[in-house]
Amino acid sequence: MTDPAAGVDPSEPSIARVYDYLLGGTDNHAVDRAVGDYFLRDLPGSVEIAFANRRALVRAVGAMADDGLRQFVDLGSGLPTADNVHQVAQRHRPGARVVYVDNDPVVLAHGRALLAADDRTAVVQADLRAPEGIRDHPEVVGLIDFEEPVGLVFSAVLHHLDDDERPADLVRWWADRVPSGSLVYISHFRSGGNEETRLAQQKLQDTLGRGRWRTDEEITALFGDLELLQPGLVNCPLWRPDPAPGEAGSGERELTVWERMISCGLARKP
Ligand SMILES: C[S@@+](CC[C@H](N)C(=O)[O-])C[C@H]1O[C@@H](n2cnc3c(N)ncnc32)[C@H](O)[C@@H]1O
Image (tube, rainbow, N blue to C red; front, side):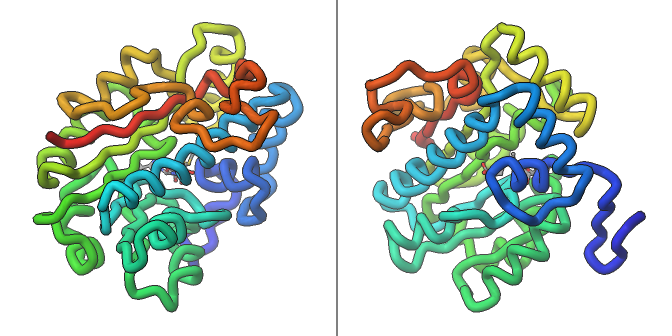
């Protein structure tokens, strides 16, 4: 059954809504919660992938804004949650402009509601596999000046593209269209080469038809010729950590097997 108003099919799980559920959000349906519950129940601890990813994103956007960036395109942005990219960016650099892009209609509906009063932020519903339509979208052109360095955010989205959808080419497409000094952030499911990776990947493929855990080598290749900034590609909790004592990344405890299954890096266009 499809909700014609929003273009949403509540009988099919969606990546954005399953992720929202795992992060503790309420913008999800029973079918999304069923997928989320499998992870919570049968792969205990796996939800740390989502939280580690989200915390690293907040640190990375802060670092990009501190580096001088004033405009961001967040591709595969997900549903609004705590500390969204525009809030982090504007906290570090008042006036920062952000365009959120996602192909899930629920993201558009909730994003528009959240951003109704913010003329420095827009939400565009589009498929990142067709980048021309995003680059030339009136809302993107209206907010992003492609003559000025841009922050490109690919947070937990490229692992939803299959190899034959050429995620590295997509990153290069954008990198070729932004000036020197632009920054590209990527976080990605990282294969631990273990049973946990196999089970998690199998479940995502069975339910959402997507979800590819890549090796360090494969994730590094997504950055192409861009210059990876310190500390390179690392597990998300170890990316410029700012953790409370006792938390992952504080050096006081080992990362869990799940926290090792999500990595990220930030790169600069020379
Ligand atoms: C796991 S969520 C990550 C959300 C957010 N970037 C974060 O890191 O917290 C992945 C998001 O990518 C979106 N997505 C997946 N494939 C996409 C595509 N082809 N085009 C646009 N968005 C896509 C999903 O709808 C979902 O909202």
